[in-house]
Length: 432
Image (tube, rainbow, N blue to C red; front, side):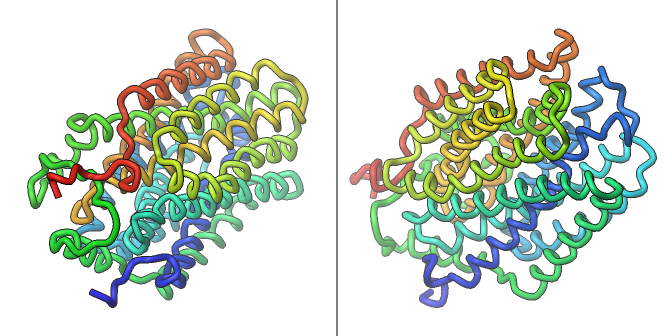
């Protein structure tokens, strides 16, 4: 069991490799964050007033990624984390070719189906693998670093592709950039990624033997020794108050990211902002979100999970609403940064909280269910945003809807969630 000792320092090389992997995963989705929505009409024939069709590529991505998160979590406990990671990169290989040769917007929607599979498999495995190899008190730090690397990649790719599309042919730029990233990621995974499932098994043995260090987590007690897929899905979705609060928070916060992905570029473009300037505004959101997680993750290890999540949700709501109340590039950059700070507070903390109360025997599955609901939020949010904007005839309606949904989601967390950090809220002694 000593071979599979947990801890970032003890497993630094593999921890760093998983950071590189999630950076590549972020770049794969980030390459279309700025360019694709702005060029939807001119390059792919999307009518200017068709907000539902515009959001179609986010809708397809969200529903597929959410489902694949759930599937990959269960698969990873049988086939292993490394295999699922590699499968995710193999699925991504056709995406750059579709962007280059696609004759219509429907092909872009199809490409995002593959992107959803890639993200559901690859990003999920970087998170799960890190939680396998770190100590429980390092989960906030680990998820903070993971999401910093991932969303740093998202922001950097969005900015790079904006410059490339401004100076060169847009489709060719996406093709070359995307193919290079995916091939580098696949080669790196094949050569350097290790299987981390043995660390989870060793943690489970230590827990059952009662020899683990530190406070005992509040694992749910009404779970069978070998829970089925349905049992884990129902537990995380509906049957456990804290899991349910975390799942709904993850779902609703993706309304914000769907808004930034689909509506921000189009809204700013309508205000006369150039493609490169849009790249910077959207990039600031991503850079602040990614960079701030270097301190928000460790913060949740120190002060707990509940209130960073709730406060982060409310900060996002304020930033989204403020975007409509200000004018000018600097002001929009500040509201984008505000949203980024809010996302940084809630995002890694939600993952860490789910990991806190998930037994190592079914942690991959429970994370998969949480990430199912979280990324289904892309699809639900994008669909609702498109319908609301179409109904009211203005993108602004989507902004107000997102702000209100986030405010209510934060209230749900504040009322229904129990603290999950074992140091602050350990299992009752009589149950130990």
